[in-house]
Image (tube, rainbow, N blue to C red; front, side, top):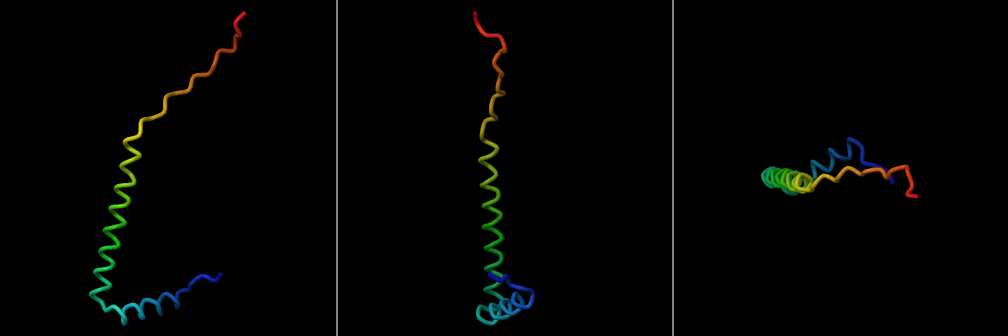
Length: 65
């Protein structure tokens, strides 16, 4: 499947600007940035709350008699 090149992105941006207008697009961009920032903050919180695993001890090489 071909990926979008530079000109395709420009055309998509112009079409979106014409359809939605500058105010709607700026509001959408702000809301998207805020959502991404909140997601990153919330996803990082869980990692800090997990306890660290205890060090594993190796069994002794000696076998009981």
